[in-house]
Length: 88
Image (tube, rainbow, N blue to C red; front, side, top):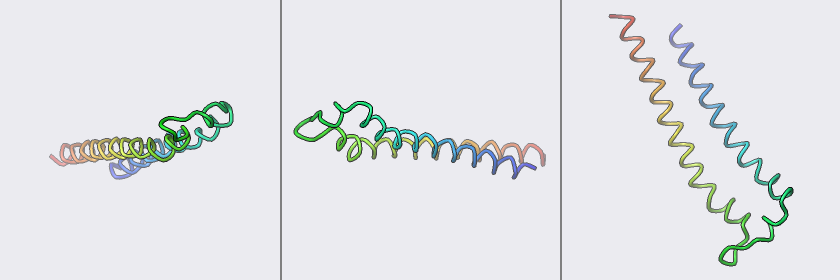
C-alpha cells in the first residue's frame, strides 16, 4: 500500500515537471508566431529566439531538475517516515 502511494506520488511529480517543461518549450514557437517582433528583436547582435532557446533554456532546465530532485527526496523521506512509524 505504501509503495503504491510512493510510486503514484513520484509519477505525479515526474509528469508535472515534464508537462511544465513541455508547455514552456512548446509555447516558445507559439509565442514566436503570435508575436513576430520577438523574431526580429536583437540583443547584442543576436536574435531573441537564439537567446531563449540557446541560453535561457539551460538554467531553466537546471532549476527544473533541482526542483524535481528536492521534491523527490522529500517524497521519499515522507515514505520512509511513514514506513518507520507504521513498523514501530
